[in-house]
Length: 127
Image 1 (cartoon, one colour):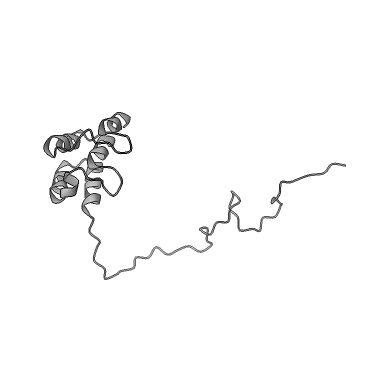
Image 2 (cartoon, one colour):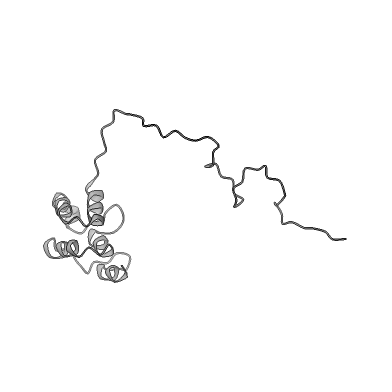
């Protein structure tokens, strides 16, 4: 006589609320959500200096970077963006040499500043 054993919790039924990993998942719904545009009377949210500077660095937009840096004393002194690093670190990580040159030569951001035991040079070498 051969017996078949299954690990605890396994059975042959398919009528359960578990996804393929065995976890209950409430994000799977049977109804589709409407993507209809709903007009509101709210004014568009203006981005802050950090977000504009972050996006300018990612896009490699030197003129926008200069404009945003002139508007914020905190960022000119090497302050951290909401995303975590100072602007120089992001420019090094994204390999944007024109922005790095601007930040170091014109804004005189400290290249030896450490953040989580890393410097801008370490980040540039890892990019």
